[in-house]
Image (tube, rainbow, N blue to C red; front, top):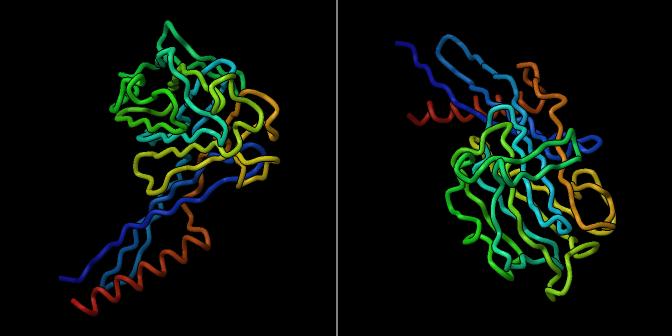
Length: 247
């Protein structure tokens, strides 16, 4: 029987341009080798992405999954250098009766509940407590198209006023998607917006909110290997050759 072996490879490629910093192409392909030759099969790339707003004036943190297929499994929020969670009041999540409406991007309204997105380490009143500058949310079913958020006060470190301006310096979001090995990370640093580094909008810290945009404009990529992909294929072939030599 002819020898036959396949290696599965995944790559991700970040998209830039305008305010499209939070979109990744995620491509999977397999390379197979046998005594009769070598073949490579490349699937269409899939966009992963999200939209988010952190708003101390409205007292909300909200997310929408705009991926084509992947679910959101984990969200890590690191507030700015001068911002912390302030409770009471007790934070609570969105629902049809308590929506969060965002006017940026194409606009969306978050109404999904904890149960609908599968918040697994909640309720949010136990995740977000008074004082810390970070929070982590875990999900089992935050599906594409769903939007969910939290009502919570965001104050300066002294707890005397709503956070704003340079208080947001350094705010960072890390979003983990199903089947994607690395998180999608976006952050804001003062004073200016730089594509690929400071992935937030607007460019300067002049208000009480930070928005994190994403784009679905090029969500389908032809299944033809790019030069970088061909390099991965070559590496996979070398790996298989070494395996077979030592088997």
